[in-house]
Amino acid sequence: MEAEVYLQLRKIEDTHWWFVARRAIIKHILCSMQLPQDGKILDIGCGTGGNLAMLKAFGEVAGLEMNEAARDIAQAREVCPIHLGSLPDNIPFQGQQFDLVTLLDVLEHIGDHAGTLKVIEKILEPGGRVIITVPAFQFLWSGHDERHHHKRRYNKHELTQVLLESGLQPLHVTYYNMWLFPVIVVLRLVKKLLGQHDSDDEKPPSLWLNNMLRMVFESERHLVMRTELPFGVSLLAVAQRAQAKS
Image 1 (cartoon, rainbow, N blue to C red):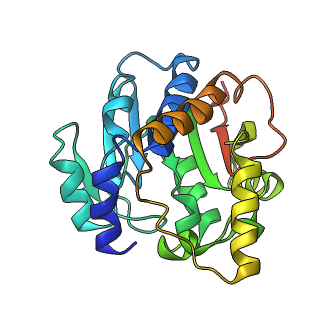
Image 2 (cartoon, helix red, strand yellow):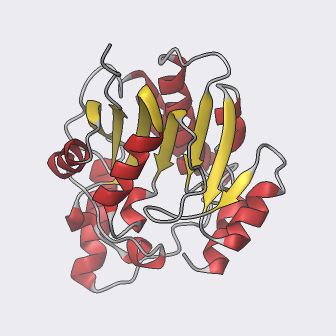
């Protein structure tokens, strides 16, 4: 992403409804996982570090970020070590394995997503898990995807298949951000029909609207692991490295 995108991200990710609600959903999932005490967690593509403090409550955290400016911003939070590197070919964790890896809206930025997941499978402990979130449905492609240098959006079948091809075992794959899906679909399709460019969707809305959107989105934390939601603006997957054979 462009440097100014990271600067804007740092300004809003602690309070913007989308980031706050996504953290609440991921936290709810982690609470149900029964991770090892003091387990090792790697946040790949940690950006400016908005998720690190939340993750640190569940184990020993490290971050990996390819952009040096974003890495410096994340390091300034003083939550955990942030390493420079990228997937699939430049990962500075040779010989290390993790109980949990998170890729939160990262995979869509990577050309070789299959190769990336194969590397992640290797750095997970046997039985270790990965949590992945990605944007859903190619027909929702917009200026936001272009500004953030996305390579693709996914459907459920595509994400499941690339997980299987990497050797990871999908445990749960579901759409999410379902409640707001109809509104977002209509807005994006109308803009396309009218030939309008996206507004700056990274700009925080008014306080009351921000709080309302957060509560609506965040309420899905009670659903995402109980069922497979039929549609949504995004996809969420929990997958596992196979247990070592005794």
